[in-house]
Image 1 (cartoon, rainbow over the protein chains, first blue to last red):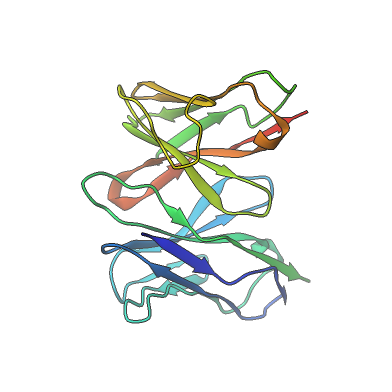
Image 2: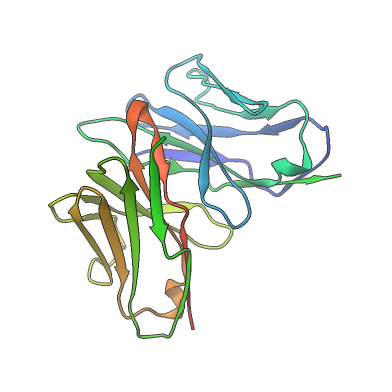
Length: 114
Length: 114
């Protein structure tokens, strides 16, 4: 089956620190990979995605590279801000005979301190 | 872009009563709707998949008689939690596949059963 494993949080960083949130996956088929962000009290928002090996998704200073050889999609940001405090979810979907639901990791809470 | 309007955003109900959650696709047709549940500090777990005009497909362990899903039109899918109990308190969120492998999420409904 499909599964996503994320590093456990919370991750606490000071403003302007470098961020890495690890994500690895297993999938039956060729998955598309996503990072979603959930701010306090809100629903999920797509942060970035990649649909094939070696693709790099990027948005708002965040980036992640689809690594097929290591089945990973680690999220990185060079300099975090307090406003980046949220829960980050790695997810995948595998297209088949129909549109498939996303499989989510457990989420990683990021807390950025001023 | 595509928008899914989910209502209510929060609801408090008494144990034993039923609650209906609506997800409407605005300006586009949603033939498929995924329903997820998120317990505090946990990831989103797929509950069921609804397709317009047909019966919903439920994930293992989800009681179809308790979580009634209706997808009678291309713009509206509903989830009714019947005879709600405190253990049903959770964050419920809908999602529909969009163009280019994307997914659009509703803003979520926080259900508290007292």
